[in-house]
Amino acid sequence: MHQCEWPGCREDAPHRAPRSREEFNKFRWFCKVHAAKYNKAWNFFANMTDDEVEAMVRNDTVWNRPSWPIGTGHIVDAFMRGHFTDPLGDLGGQRSQQKNSSVKTPGMGLPANVRSALAVFDLEIPVYTSDVKLRYKELVKRHHPDAQGPSKNSEDRIKAINHAYTVIMEFLDP
Image (tube, rainbow, N blue to C red; front, side, top):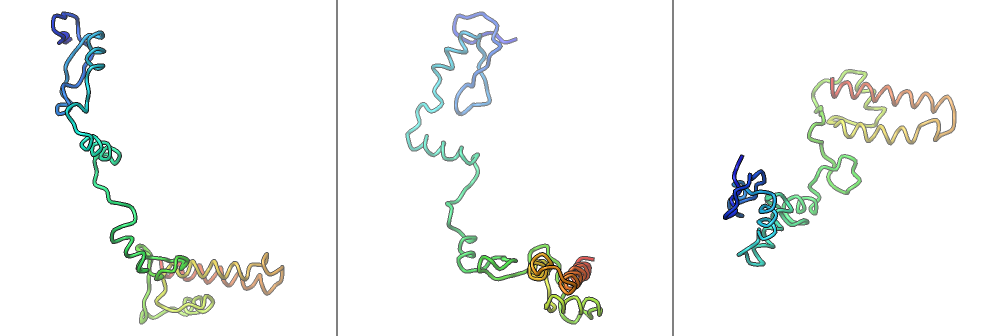
């Protein structure tokens, strides 16, 4: 057990307090009464200018990590020029392959079932998984029996779309 560091006090000192702003992890030890007095009088921002206090507060809001103003930098510039991944095409950017999407390119010798599945989707190689998913959603919305009314033709069409989707996705991600 520590002894209270308050001048003239001989009590046990179970309470710690930081020595200074510069030595925040080094402590002085006090009894309960003197710890309260020390803490009440201690000013973390003593001898700091207003600008230094403001800079410290701003730095603490981001856990003392670097930060940049919002709305600037290469990411915003790329977005403004339309150079970003827009797999669904709804942001007006270039539709491009997603980072983890599979792609197959021409000259790979497609099996007949894959060629016919691509024909159902009206897609050609190279084809990306994101393109297949987008086209699948479009076709299902258009040909689903709930949207068209129940008929044998719409049921057959949706079955063909579902089968084609399975074939293409198994081909892209075996």
